Image 1 (cartoon, rainbow, N blue to C red):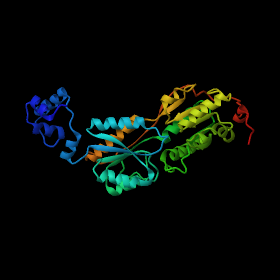
Image 2: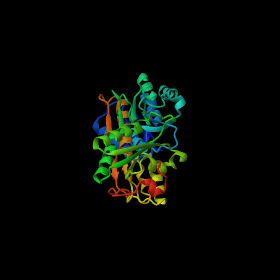
Image 3: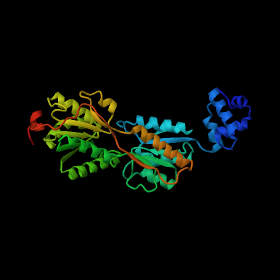
Image 4: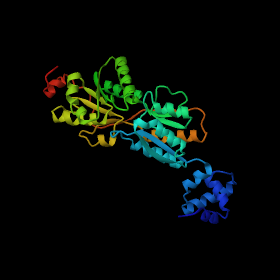
Length: 351
């Protein structure tokens, strides 16, 4: 392992001068700083995070806090946040927290000095974690939104704009009756989870504004909830020619089950996923058309905003929404003319 003394010898300076540059504790001349940084690069020196923490009285660690829920997929958010943190001289740790002791664990995390600030995911409309951090005057940023956002740093998927875009894209292809499938999180720790609530509201408002017909189906994530979805779609929206699924398992189940039962995709019905896994959607036949979640930009921006807040480099809060981006597959086509109701196509008795 390369030591600070070796860096000092290579740059022909004292070890204390190297420490000033590494820890940012005292200014040095630009020429000396450049010489030390060149030595660091040449030798591959990596500063000791514990020593730096002792010197600065900061851990240079940020924590990403999320609930313990098996069905959530966050790798792109996490990877980007970790990379952005590292670029700014911080480490990111994942801190899964059970809903029963969330405020106690967050208090311990901050007060014990394990982290300088936190990023919260899976944000609810009224989120006790946010209220707790505000009372504690602890630095934090959100990936998601609460109902009240004054003075809060957040980045989020623009679900409203993404849903509006998906509806308009379908309408341009002649679709007049559209079904929305969203997560049913009632009875779970995320019953007030923001995205399904905002998505459903945006869907209903846009459908009404465009003079279209819309149906909303709320579906859980367990197999007992997902497997009956095809028949629920047929019974509740028999004339729907398009489906917007903000629910990975639901989208994948519909594509597979409808085709297995003789309904052609996209000739008989079109299906898109919003904030869906594009990589997994590409494995379906036909490949699922998706509006891909901006996971990497959101993770990076959240980490940057939090670190700027920790370091006192920001006055106005960062508040940014990014819409999903279209990834074309093979599951969308113009609306079929004169198609029989789904109940008939599937051989289901009409309700």
